[in-house]
Every structure is written in C-alpha cells, then in structure tokens.
Length: 293
Length: 311
Ligand SMILES: Cc1cc2nc3c(=O)[nH]c(=O)nc-3n(C[C@H](O)[C@H](O)[C@H](O)COP(=O)(O)OP(=O)(O)OC[C@H]3O[C@@H](n4cnc5c(N)ncnc54)[C@H](O)[C@@H]3O)c2cc1C
Image 1: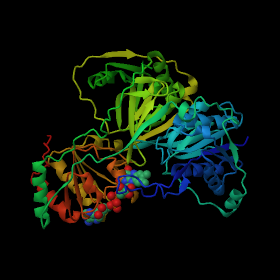
Image 2: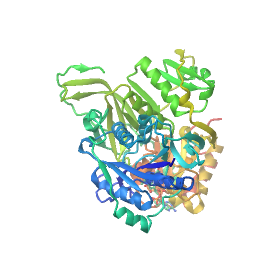
Image 3: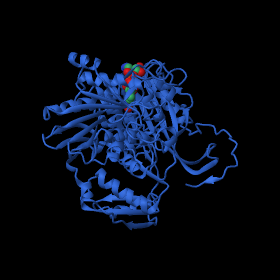
C-alpha cells in the first residue's frame, strides 16, 4: 500500500524585511506573494519522506482565492504530483476554526479519514507569517481525528507505518513516535526547501488543478465565513509608542556621556506609563437586552 | 479555577492557590508526566463539559499553542492566539439587537506587530493563549486558602498512541530572562566582538548582586553567535525587566515587540536616527566600543542603575 503525502500550503505576502513607515504603519502594498516560509519547509519534509517511500503519492492542498494556484504550481515544480484548491466566496472571513474545519472536510472528501485503509501523512507549516496563530494544523488533526505533532523540525519514516518527529520545545526538543495517519507541522529550521526543477516547472505549467467549492465537498455554510466563524475581529487599532520622548546624554567623550546618562537616570521621570492606548469613544449604548452566553 | 495535570502535581496545588487560584483541580497520573496533546485534550474537554467555564486560557507555549486549538475544535470554540492583553468587555450586536456581556476581549498584535486587534469569541468557553512574559505573575500570598479537587478523567487507550521517546531540555530555555531585573541586549552592531562587552556588562552587574542577564536581537542568532533562547522579539522572547539596555540595536518593530513592556529602556547606538531612540527613555549616541568599557568600569565601582543588590 503506497503512502500518500499531503502538504498543506498557504500563499502569503512576502514578509520582506518589514519596517514601520513614517505613519507607524506597515507597508504591505508592494509585497509580492510567496508560499508561506514554514509551509515551504513542510513541502520539503514531504519530499524527504520519498527516501523511505519512493512510490508515495504526493499531493498539495490549499484553501483561498484563485490566485493561490500560483503557490500550488510552485509546489508541483518542487516535486509534488497533484494539486487541490478549496476556493469559495462563502469561505471569506473564516477564522482559524472555520479554516481548519473546511480543510479537514476537503481532505475527508478526498478519502483521507481516520479509518482510511491506505496510510497517509499530512504536513503543514508551523504557522503563517500573515496570521501567526499556528492553529490550523491542530484543528485539522482534531477534525479528522488523528494524532499530531507540531513545531517539528524533522520527520523520518521507519519505512513502516510510523514516523519519528523531532519536536522543538522551550529550551530543548522531544523525539516522538507517531503512527500514521497523522498531522505534522514544520518549523523553518529543518531541511531548507529545494529549488524548483526544470522538469517540475514543465509539469507545473501543464498541471490541472482540481478546484472545489464548498458544495462539492459537502460543507455547509453554518460554520464557515464571517458569520459562521466562532470568533470575529472586533476592532484593529494602530499601536502607539507608549514612551515619552527620549532624554539623550550629552558630552564630548565617553566619560562625560556616561556621567550624563547616570545623571539623567537619577532624575528619572521618563518611565513607561501605561496610558490607555485607545481613547474610549463614548458609544451610545443602545437599549438592547443583555445576552449572557 | 486552574487545572493541573501530571505526575506528583498535588504538591503544587497550594502554590497555585497562593498565586491567586480559588480552586485547583488536579489530575494525578504517572503516564502523564510528559505533556501529550491527545490525553490532555480529552481531560480538558471532560472538565469543560462538567464545569462549563465561560473562558479557558492557556500559555502560548509550544504545548499551549497546539493544545488550545485542538480543544477548541472539540468544543466548537474559536481560539485567539498569542494574546498580549485580555479584558472583560461587552459587544453590541446591531444585527441581533442584543448586547453580549460579559465577553472576553482578547488582544493580539497583527501585521508584524504594528497593529493591535481585538478578537471576540461567541462560543463558550472562549479560548485564548497568552504570550509568555507579557503578563505579570500574580503576587504570591503565602497561606492563601482555596479548594483543591482531584479529578478522575476517563482515559482512552487510543489517546496514548503517540510515544515520547525522549525529552531533552538544555539551559531551561533561559527562563531567567523572564525574571531578570536588568537585561543588556546586543544587536548586529555589537557582533564585532561577538557580544563580548555585552556579556561583560551583564557579568559586572551580576557581581554587584544584580539579577542581570544578557540577550540579543535576531541577526545575532542568525549569525550563529548566540543561541535562539536569548533572542528577544516577535519570534523570540517577550521580556519585561525593570531596565532594558539595547546596544547596537536599530529598533525594528519585531524587536520592539519583545521588549516594549520593559520599565526603563536605555539605548546605545551610533546612529542618531535609529528608531530605537523613539522607543527608549534614555540614550547615548556613540560607539558601543567606547561607551560600554566606561559603563562597565562604573558598575565595577558600584553603580547599579538604581537597582538594589540582592545578596
Ligand atoms: C517575521 C519576522 C520576525 C522577526 N522577528 C524578530 C525578533 O524576534 N527579534 C529581532 O530582534 N528581530 C526580528 N526580526 C528582524 C528585524 O526585522 C530586524 O531585522 C532585526 O531586529 C535587526 O536587528 P539589529 O537591530 O540587531 O540589526 P540592525 O538593524 O542591522 O541594526 C544594527 C544597529 O547597530 C548600530 N551600530 C552598528 N555599529 C555600532 C557601534 N559600533 N556602536 C553602536 N551602534 C552600532 C547601527 O546603527 C544599527 O542601528 C524579524 C523579522 C521578520 C521579518
């Protein structure tokens, strides 16, 4: 029974050395799109598994707008064989719960369930640079009902139905043995992603990407999109520096400068005062009933 | 209410009560000495079913960040990751014509830390993970009283299919960066001497009885000069010492994210336009190779930045 290696990828704006502009905002407009870095390490980890499973089937999946096809083609150019995209307007605004649910539903639709006769392994990036939550791999694993290891640096197969994962933890690591099927999320510290190959690039160009809408995979609208997600983003405010202007040391040599610094510190006064970052706008509190939930 | 799981954890319940828990529920089980996501998810979900909490909080550690979403998926709750602020508020829903109250407001930085988003969850428990180092540990009140309750979960053998072969912990992940009173942090500008002067300043302060540590910005780790555990910033540690001395650090937002809660920030940089100066209270414009030796001398003769020495 051949193994199926499934990679989950997300396309993100290039997190080029992001710096704050004059207005205190991040400039994201010029960014072009790439496969999220952590997901690239996931793709590579999948290709590494070919060593023990040379006849494995390699598939790559994503959820997002049609433009995400570019990421799928890049994955195929690296060595993947099949590509699936879950793309539906109704998914717009989904939070991580809804995203995990939708991706798991697509995978189950493709036949990857916890009772599958054929072994499979799902690889993902640890987290995305534009969301930074690290939730989705866990949520997918739970929804399918299979074990997981996250924050994994390397994963090796013993050639049977088990993999050994090196999981990075605070100040160290763990080696764990997982039976397949399972979900593994990769940190960007393992084997660096390979470049596209020429034959891969040709394959990618001619690739037929299978695109699903939510109806195709039997996913209802109750738990997805803005209205179905259990969480919402209520507001976003710019972060302001909470520090008063700096007091700089004065002097012409290091002795004088250090004297000045010490004198300034002794005067003190310039310490962090937690000011209410957002001035509370007095909103008219409508006369709605309270809902204790 | 706090849930603690592990081997020989009953003895820790009193400490949790003294730090502010009213009730500590403990699961004592030799097989759970090492954290395992599947049995932990099962135990938490069983307890959530029994007690119906409105809110469930986890640390945003490598375990908390996978445990919380796994539990959230089982309880149909959304999860907010890596929060730097948690408050109780209310939400006015114009559509439903109701006011959700009380509701948990989870705040987290987004877009590379330049914005702060408030996330609300509408399914209980509202689950969030809290970023390590951003919240103060509630002060310990020795002798504080509370309830301790043993909890006997139903454990399924299937939840033990993953085996931890071994666990390696190095320097404890430099947890002492979280409680240091003073941190001297070196950036790319201080790699000329491989952070030698940075370490010397920290050492001199330690010799004076100050709880001092040294840290660094990301390029220093990338160049292989120090270990990752010392990195401060968005993808490293968030620290809040009484005094943070940033030397040869330009002040990129990703770095600021990890130290902006510090009490007093002192910046030493040769570029007067470096944005670290907009995020510091006191500063010196100059070459660290001139300034630090002088500062180290002062410390050796007893200067401690106003901090009291601990014996
Ligand atoms: C997704 C993402 C996550 C990131 N996470 C982190 C993170 O967690 N932590 C982090 O630190 N960075 C992080 N970064 C990187 C961050 O954007 C900056 O690149 C980094 O913080 C710059 O480090 P630095 O200030 O040490 O170096 P530089 O920006 O190169 O600054 C060096 C400074 O040293 C000064 N200098 C040089 N020589 C001297 C001298 N002789 N004396 C005095 N001053 C001198 C220079 O004037 C300059 O200001 C992240 C970036 C991204 C995209």
